[in-house]
Amino acid sequence: MLAWLRAEASRIANTVLWSWQGWASAWRGEKSLRQWTLVNLCSAALAFSLDLSAGERALILSLGLLVLAAELMNTAVEEVVDYISTAQDPRAKRAKDCGSAAVAMTALAGGVAWVVILLS
Image (cartoon, rainbow, N blue to C red; front, side):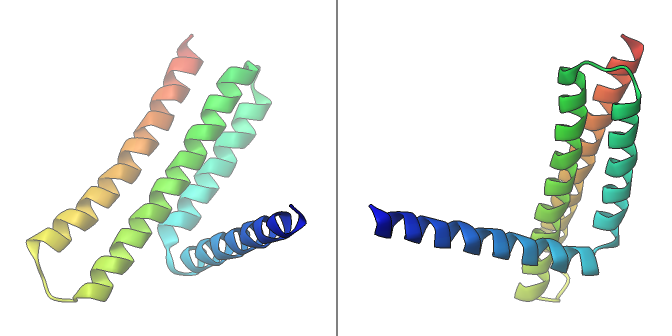
């Protein structure tokens, strides 16, 4: 049992390290991640300054995190496509465009949540 706990702790530590390395790499190379982070900080500050319910606040904060997750996944798609080939290919363009659309859709979901909360 103790060996299993050590192995799990080691695996969790590695996962945290690799996740941090991914975030740091994307932060250095992706201006859009830095921009979405700033938007999320502003959104979170607004969510905590307004008289919102805990559920409303949780929704706003969670959707903001999903935008960042989508941006990280979009970055991963772009990196893989660029690694495979630098040649122009309609499939590569479609993959990159779909990744960008995923970010836009999650951002739109966050915007919809804000509109519904503010108008209710």
